[in-house]
Length: 187
Image 1 (cartoon, rainbow, N blue to C red):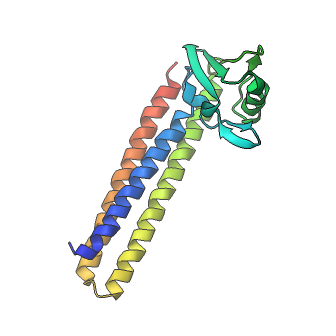
Image 2: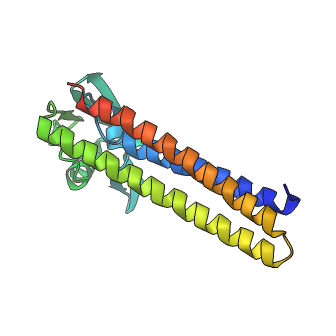
Image 3: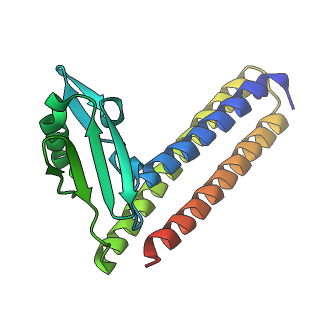
């Protein structure tokens, strides 16, 4: 392989790995039957005038499989945390006793499980769009290198290599989805 192609492959590899990491983080937010602190990872709390991630103003614990307990570090922001959880559209109904916020996680209905699988599928599709964008950008760089003197054979080989990476990461995303679907649909 031509030395001028190494940065292209490195950026493809890095970008596609990040796409997989992002997909995993997004799928963690989809609950599959039992409570997990990561279910509140996207909640932003208004704290001294700026939006702050919930985990930077409170502890989130799971005393059992159906309950989340949010313990604010400052009592004064408990109502703000409660409001942030309600406004996050996660479908939770927090109970505030002035000290802690308790969220009871209802068992998933079949209908809700199917909705969650659809959400997971959508996240996987978004991930695959990212992969295709990375592939397109890499192929554009390869074409530019070809204009600047890279041989046609090397350019074709490089594009084939980028396609092989894209296919491999796409298969990884499919495998991640299959696992998540199984996890969601298991009662």
